[in-house]
Structures are given as structure tokens and as C-alpha cells.
Length: 406
Length: 142
Image 1 (tube, rainbow over the protein chains, first blue to last red):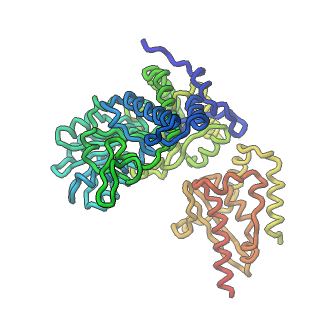
Image 2 (cartoon, chains in turn brown, blue):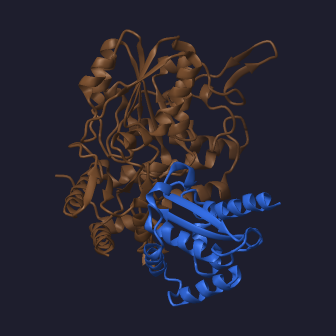
Image 3 (cartoon, helix red, strand yellow):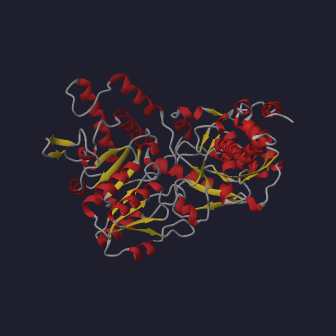
């Protein structure tokens, strides 16, 4: 029996939740955009700058040694968090967007040739569309998209039909940021493996909400962002199989990523450092460790159980509202809900809810192709996290009903 | 004929009763939007759209005796309310008066947040559009 989460004690760890917005208690329902940070993350950043700020990996003095150690500790925690084989497979980036850009560029440079095909899906975030379009333009590759059905689920048969002997790479979102759909990535990865296709999984939305085991998944790349999982902004992770990481060229040139530099020839550092040119965002990587510890200590099973409960509760409440239309009705989903309200523009709704202290997102959510598919300019979207309470959902639903009735 | 500044002062007075309450301000803006003179559907075309990020705004004008008459609409109620304020302020003004105007009412009625950093807000682009119309008509007169 999985223990129940005490949401009150979780909420106390997030100082921002005490904020008043337009005279009301903040109800933060924009977690798919970014999550709030627990005090231990904020304190870790503060403590780093006050006590052991130094540049890492090169210095021999005590501060540099301490900073390097703490920085590398995060890499170990990330490795365990996604169950990678080795810390060499963990590359720090600025975020998921940089992660996808790095893989698209470096992988295509080494392995993709004219007329090769890449497959993404209709529900991708712009950051998993545009980097591939750029690479396709540059190298004359072809980009194909997997169809999404009216419930917002991936059409896996359509995926199979898209595969040809030219297909070399698949880049797919684990959980959709606009529909909430959890994609059957294990199934897709298996199909890729059978055909010798490499696959990247965009885990930006998945990392705080579901278990990730990259060895069990057997994906070639998995990318995520720290700020979507209670960590700082400006930090992301690429997991990549070490064999491929060793084969592909570096992304940027500079310090840290080299072994030896002369004007005739430069040799590159080993992975993961080969991909980490320049001084990284040291303080935030160190603070990211606390976000992972927060998740681990709260207990991933306990978190998932609570999130499922509040997701089901919210879904039922939303479905009971007249004139509300949900986009994305996948069976397997997380607490991300995109909807429209009859005769009420999402922009007006967003502002009216804000006046009541409720933060939601409105617009196309950086997923214009899927909006076009559903013939929408945009939607209102709420997205839940571990600190959202039933009381908050009730308040949101009441507020929504009040606004609609006016 | 009321000048731009005195119309702004009138609006500031009108908003005083709302006491800076954001929800009441939004509701009042929506009311103002609803009361706005409708624009004919044939004018709701791409060329007349002011590009904002999340809402569509149409603005058209006629110029009679060097005085502007504006008509507009928006697909969002709050933006429509904001537009109605601008139309009220700028209508019956000359191009020169619009170009030389300074919109101080926005700050005073608690609508600061609609200006500046948020790309979703169309207020700034709306304000610019009035000035662009004014500018283009000055050059025609010369």
C-alpha cells in the first residue's frame, strides 16, 4: 500500500505559494510551463554563491574542488534518477530545447545523408519540430509526422506505415504539453529498435510525473529540463548512449570540451565533457540536485499516486461544466488539460482568472501544428503539480463557473 | 470639442469608483467593449488587423474635415474594452493632435500591466496603430 501524500506539508516547502495575487491566494496551475521551487532548491543556490562559488574542473584550490564535487554530485543523482548506465551519459545543457538542438545537429552531421528521413509527431512542441526542420533544410532530409487521433493519442499504425528504409531517426515527445497524453514510447522504441532507427524522447513534461528508466526504455537519447521538475531554470539534461555520444562530434567549441589544443590540431575531451564547452551554469546545476532530492525524498510512487488522484478529480469537475470542451481525451494522461469555453475567449478567461489569483496558460502552448489540426487558435490550459490541493481545484472550478455565468 | 487630455481625465474619474480592483476593472472593460459601435463584417479582414499575440483587433477610420472617426472590434472582450477607450480618446481628433498626444490615463487607471513586456498584450500595438494612421494622414495633407 502506497502512503498518501500530505499536501499541506508539501505546500509549506514552497515559499511562493504564500504569495497574494490581486488580493487573492495564488493558485498556480501553470506547471507545464514551469514549476515552483521548494525552499531547499532556493537555499542551495544561495548557499553556493555565499560559500563556494568557483569555476569547476580546472582549479586546484579548495573552492574549485568543492564546487566541482557538488556539480558532479548532481550528475550522479540525475544518472540514478533516470537509471542511466554511467554518468558519462549525462550531459548538462540549458534545457530541453538546447538538448534537442544539440542532438539534431551533432547526430545529423555524423550520420544523416541526403534523402534520409526523420519522423516526429503532430503533437510535438515547437522545440521538437524546428530544430529538425533546420537540419532537414540544411542536409536535404525529409521530415515526416505521425498522425494524432481526435482523442489526442498517437496513431501507432500510422507510425509503422511511415517507416521506410530511409528512416534514420525518430524524435518523439513522451508526454504532450498541450494535450497531456502519455505516449506509448516503449512500443515506439521497440519498433525503432527492430528497424535500426535511432530515437530521441523529449521528456520535458514527463520527468516530474512518471518514472523514467532509460535502460529499460532502451532509447538512444532522452532530454529533460530541470525547471519543469521543481529545479532551477536554465538547466537541462541530455541522456545519450555512450556509444553514440562517442561517435558524434561536439556541438560547440571552447574550454572544457578539449583535451589538447594546437593551431594544427585539437583533440576533444571525453564524454560528457566533450559536449559541455564553456563555464556551465554551476550554481543552478548544484541547486538542481536539491530538486531531485525533493522528488526522491517525497517518494515518486507517493507523488504519482497523489497526482493521479487530483488529475481524476479535476477531469471529472471539468467534464461537468456546460460549454467546456476538452482537447486531448487520451486514456493514458497526466494532469494537463487544454480546453475552450463557449462564447468566452481564452485570453479573457486567463485575465479574469488571474484577477482571482489563479495562474493558467492561454494560447497555442508552442504547439501550433496540433492546434491547427483541432482548428484552434489556442486554448486555456491548466497543468497540475504535486502542491496543488483539492481545495485549489474547487476554487478554480467555482471561479470558472462564476465567470461563465456572467 | 473635447481634447484628448480632457477625455483621458474623464476616463480616470470614471475608473476611480473601481478602486484599482483588477477584477472590477476587467468587468468594466468588457462592459465598455459591449457598448462599442459595431463594425461591419466586411471590414474584418486581414489588412485591418492589428497584430497582437493572443487576440485579433480590427481598426478602421474615416477622416472628415481633418478629424478622425474610428471604428473597431476585437475577438476578445477585454481587448475590445481597451480599444473602446482608445477610440473614445482619439475620435474627433486631428492627426496632429494624435501624434502629439501623451497617454497618461493608462497608468492612472491601473492598466500598466497591459503595457510593455508581455508579448500577449495588444495595447501597445493598438496605440501605435492610431499614431501610424495619424502620421500617414499628415503626410497626405502636406
